[in-house]
Amino acid sequence: MRWLGIAVLCLALGGCYATGADVRAKLGQDYVGKNVDALVMRWGPPASSFKMNSGETAYSWQLASGSSISVSRDGPSSASGSSKGYACKVNVVASSNGMIKSLDTEDKDSSLYYGPIPTGVQLGSVCAEQLGMKQQ
Figure 1 (cartoon, rainbow, N blue to C red):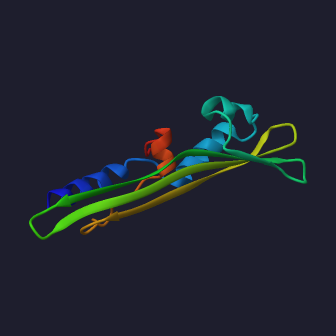
Figure 2: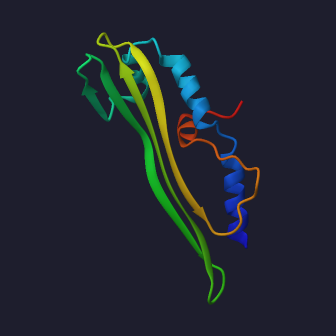
Figure 3: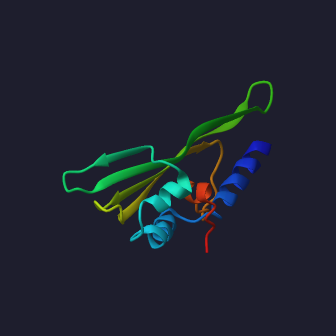
């Protein structure tokens, strides 16, 4: 039962982070129209880039990825636990002169918790967590 309380607390705290849409809007506001070098200065070189036939270049940054598993023995014949896989990826398209035309994020959060998940809890974005972006 103790682990259920911890899982519920983690879910509740996760709701403090901004949503994926909030992250895209904020990053778009901060970077669309600027040179892609601004993102390189912030996050380092992209994980991948691709020169398109149009002359534009697509860039991708992998900001976070991983997984964790937690298991607890509740008694001689029962156990409980949780598992979590997560990833945050930022994809950008820049014009031939390096100006950012579009920006999108990919959040992957696959969580499995033992026990009921309370209603009304909104999980935040993995990208928001990685970038430290709280809900407004």
